[in-house]
Image 1 (tube, rainbow, N blue to C red):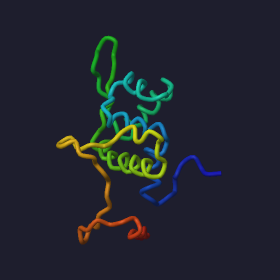
Image 2 (cartoon, rainbow, N blue to C red; image 1 turned 90 degrees about the vertical axis):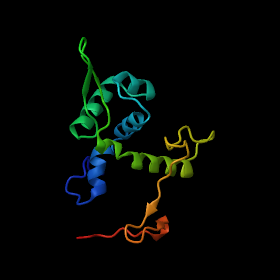
Image 3 (cartoon, one colour; image 1 turned 90 degrees about the horizontal axis):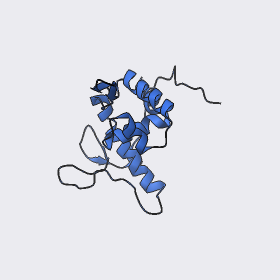
Image 4 (cartoon, rainbow, N blue to C red; image 1 turned 60 degrees about the horizontal axis):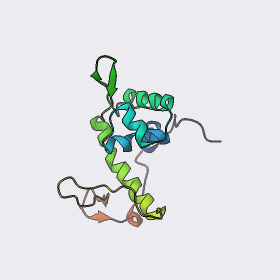
Length: 147
């Protein structure tokens, strides 16, 4: 049986999974990227219980992925906008959407598409070489230890 945490794993992927590996966390980030930032907006966009949503939002705030901001005083209500760290997850979310559309397609086609706000063109995640700048195919990637 797998342990519940990735503690002791010397790997940036394992550390990242500690933040977004729980399925609701990534779906909350997806909803935030779709424009949700208030508690009820998150509830409308996904079938999550109130107590689980409250717990996950609190964890995402504690981890620095979202901020908790008061938008109403009486009664006190909060918004949960993404932080710059959270906005960086756009790349991961779009990459997972691409992978899902390609490998686990829905019968009616994709329900969402990432679009460039400047021209409404489709956005895709591509691999590129940091040295030569060329696009890189998945078959041309080797993951190696650096230490």
